[in-house]
Length: 282
Ligand SMILES: Nc1ncnc2c1ncn2[C@@H]1O[C@H](COP(=O)(O)OP(=O)(O)OP(=O)(O)O)[C@@H](O)[C@H]1O
Ligand SMILES: [Mg+2]
Image: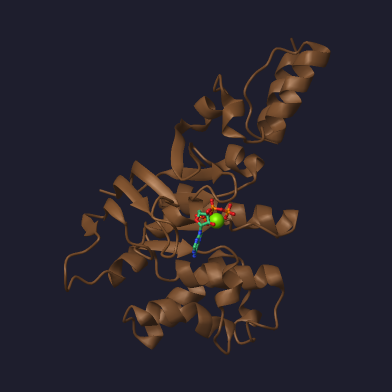
């Protein structure tokens, strides 16, 4: 009982009626244990799709079910609780920081969901440490810390609500490689240690290959592929998806062509290195 889309379409108001940002989307996501990447060209509907997962957008037609709750909701049904269960981190979330101090900003969500100051503070501290914010930053203004730290504050603000599903819209965009890897390690640990479902929108196919288990490819508002990353990168018409190949697979192809090393699908550098050691010892 996670998230279920049934024939969902959505058009932004003001658009010609024939134009749908997402079209006839049907989809099932488990409430636990998934690591899904959503990829596709700019404007393909990725952000529109995920905003339906916590009722920020309501379907124009079709239905979305989130932990057994159907959207669009009937009259008088409150949907706020969904925002706590499905945490959504926007593109460039640091633009939404607004409190006087880092810790107050992270506490905002849990307080909003009726936690006492004391409980909210505890959840906020736990979340802050999880994303690697050190305690000496807690009382600083969120506008006087680095861009990478601001991003972490925004993500901690969502984690502090202890969502079951975490949706991340290009969380590593604009970060340097170290910041990017540190943040990905946080998501990996939420997935592996706490069994949370992680849904990650990304243009970075290296990250997708290294972390995701399942990949959903969007094109012009439609899902054109939904399956394992193994199946995606071995797909006979992969070119049709207009996606880049992950670097380890590109290297593998090059080695096959130049050194005649038999191709094997590897999804990160450790995998590549392990394989090369293996064939080197033969
Ligand atoms: N607030 C909005 N008002 C009107 N049209 C919008 C709005 N947001 C998105 N759109 C349009 O809806 C379509 C899908 O946009 P969406 O932002 O979901 O794509 P995306 O896949 O997230 O793109 P990107 O990779 O650039 O983030 C695009 O054609 C876009 O121009
Ligand atoms: Mg987007």
